[in-house]
Length: 620
View (cartoon, rainbow, N blue to C red):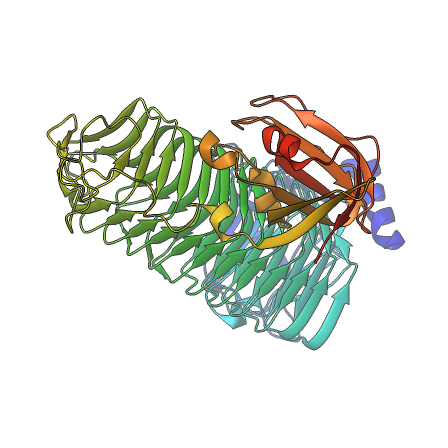
């Protein structure tokens, strides 16, 4: 490593004195173009006597894409001691090899350029002692076959002062603790890449591998994808604490069926997790925040699952573009323009048991044959919208049932092209406008419609269905509004899926306060808390927050409809202290001491419990 760093420092210090005569770009499009006019200084193109292109300094003009382009060649060559300056076109590179068989690059430099070296659909290229001082990607290997990644690129090469690690053909290998400017593992099987760190470089590439594990990765501010998984089935990406601020996606999973992303933190990327043509891929237990797009599923991917994940302040949290049978479940989605966007070419999606709080649109649907059920949507502009498409799409055959839309401007909006949607047994609670339906849809397909908090009609025959239909703007009508909301067996959204436990708070005087609590021990559950729960239900709830490690974690009461008592306990259940959080407060509440458990109880309910001074928390 010291030798490489010294070499780069020397090159920068002496400037052009080590390089030969300046010239324009070199373009070689076939074996016949290996000529002196194209920079060849010696050689006959045999293995024993390869063509030598050496000693040039190339200043790339603004209109050119490449400093050196070599394409569709089979003759041996060596590119040696060539310096390229000013290759600034993002669609080009300082050095671009396309369809090359063999070839060698050594002691070269790309400087003041956008991209360094691209090896496109090439095989058997050797790269040594070459340095990329670039604003974009240093090394890009692009191909559609395993052989396109079969190169010899050793650790004498660098991108922006950091080593390139390139591995091909590994088996049953663990690579641990690598800190680099570029990491590629290709054509390998059963490789474990443990705690790699790539910052302001090229990121990590897994290509044409099987059974790869990437664990504990820290990938920050890379110029492409943080992690690219290409044609590598059953890749497992887990427990990566920071995949953040990468220019493209945090994690891209392309053509890699049954791959999984588990327990990762993905923040501030253009796309958080990009699933493209990767059937049965799974994203679970992952936190995605501050991305322009949280998760994108496209490329006709089938049966992708997105579950138990946290989405916070992503512009669009989940987009199903070209996808079939995608399942989104038990996700907490807050502070977003669009919670889940279903595009016209997304068919048979299922979105269920998710919670959306503070969204422009909770669900935006232009696809068909989907099922959207048991979701909780609060504080949205429009809870569920089937957008106008102006003839570009015709959503048909969707089912919307058992959802709660609370305190939103519009509960539902259905555009003109939307037909044959079944909308029944939903709760529309404290919304400014229940619905607008400009299409042709069925609001009571089995004779049972929806419950509306502001319904004023009567039920003269006592069948549980209002005698007066509910009329919507645009011509839609619910002919059978429900008089009671008791048809729902549990809370919609994430809270309805959380574990319930029995516990007791014991006072100093021996008084016991028994409670049934919802256990929030996962990040997406802790994010939600009581946010958006209607007062009538919130007053009857209690929630126990639990962490694997003690800390002085903070709370707020934004969007909560009741005052809450917040009690803190250590890992043995010993009482540490208490705070009161007023309803709707956006202040941060944080004790000055670490704790393992926090118990949230509505203040009115706590007052009825009779425990003046808590002593301990008894867990079953």
